[in-house]
Length: 142
Image 1: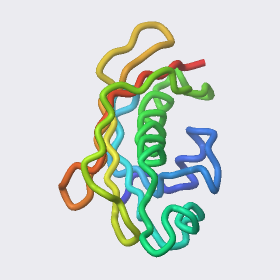
Image 2 (image 1 turned 120 degrees about the vertical axis):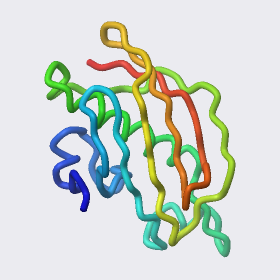
Image 3 (image 1 turned 90 degrees about the horizontal axis):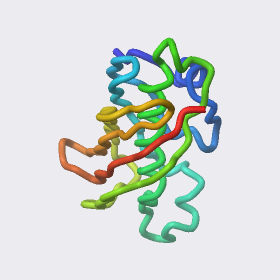
Image 4 (image 1 turned 45 degrees about the vertical axis):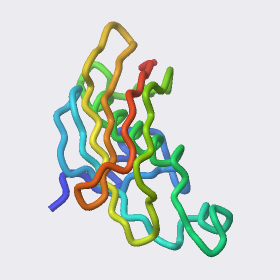
């Protein structure tokens, strides 16, 4: 059973459809770590053009989903409730496999460093235990 539903996620982060890319939160350590799930379906609007006849989830949207997972982690801490987490940098992004309709993305973001309003998260997206994307995400909480 999931820890947080999409409705509960929307109480933490400002993202809404069609740009909220998380279905559920499976694990959460407020301020430190979140594991989210995204069930990729043919109904995603970007599949109309990316790519016709061979639908592939854009890598930048997988990175965004990882960032949203990190935002849930950092914004669920008491001192950050009601704030917004913004991208500040993306480092060492690696795209290891395609993500296609029918895949279930597991999105894990661990906050590894935080100083003031800035922080860094280690982010890994997997499908069936295989790494699809990994990156280091820097964020600013305002």
